[in-house]
Image (cartoon, rainbow, N blue to C red; front, side):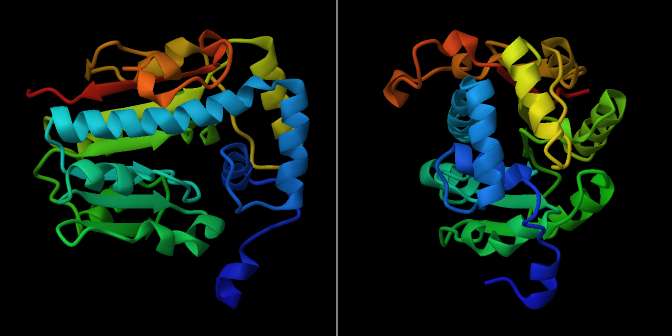
Length: 270
């Protein structure tokens, strides 16, 4: 249970993005206010549930790709969200037990559940930082207590950048994080996109609920986060289409309609 000081930082009177997303992926760490807006959003745009589920599956595929095919053993997961099944450290250490993972979030509700993110194999290590995406240098400095930043890192920023309203600011934050990582590091991004009237309406309803706003972007802007990096095939695509694994099974009748895009980019040797 969170202590009194942490509990005082948790506002249960308004919807919250981490709890809202937790509800969509079938988690238990949410409140009535989150379920109410979740049900409202589902009535406007049922496809957002598929966005949540496929985004989680993309995380698993991307981490396995980096660990198995690229030999990455370090992951920096910024905008962690609430723990669910198959968190980054679980996926990475399942295939590479010596993997090290640092989770970063500045949200008190996530901090309250951070112990669930701190399990590890004996060979590996996990850590949690109560830190802010808006201060990349502090994030990198603190992460260096667990990660060796002279060796490649997988930087995971999933369903988080929409909290930065200004696109150029969001790009600059990503650039600064990647600037502190060596060649051979990878950037992994997924986010909801403004590719349908349903998603745009759902976003507007969520932002009108009193929650901290989340801004969906055009696909071209998602692709812009990878400028200067070597895009891994198949490039910036809908989340279900990135190196799809048939064993994952169906999520719905039309995954081509999932309004979320993703990509993985490698920092080249200069």
